[in-house]
Amino acid sequence: MSTMRNAIIAWAVGALWIPAATAAGTAANTAPSAAPSASGALPGDDALTCDQIYAQGMAESQKDQQARNQRNEQMKRQSMGTAALITGAMMTGGLGGTAQAAQASAEAQADRQMGMLGTPPQSNPRLDHLKQLYAQKRCVRK
Image (cartoon, rainbow, N blue to C red; front, side):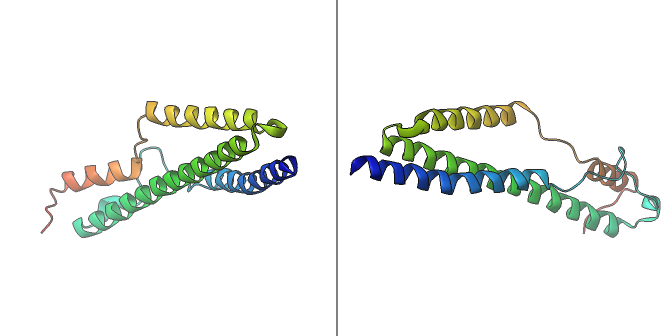
């Protein structure tokens, strides 16, 4: 009886964790593309008014914030999937290799998180260019 229960729990954890991990992987591969040029400049930038520069800068900041939120949600989903896998492994007593899978998942998650902590956030060239334009035109926010 307990062997059957353990097998069902292991299957349920696998059935729930694998789709979540797959979805998290697909979300990472569909991130928005970078700015059109390395410098962040677009044709016609010199003709922008201070208000237009400010509005475009705000839009770029919001886009960056959305990308950070998406990355944080992905990490949260991965953490929840790993926690479910570990819980299932503990409940089944490691039956069917769940302990090894849980350990590998936890180690991979720790490696990803440590890698993220070690790399500084990427600069947005478009936002940097807009800030430079804002300063060059001596714009002041009213």
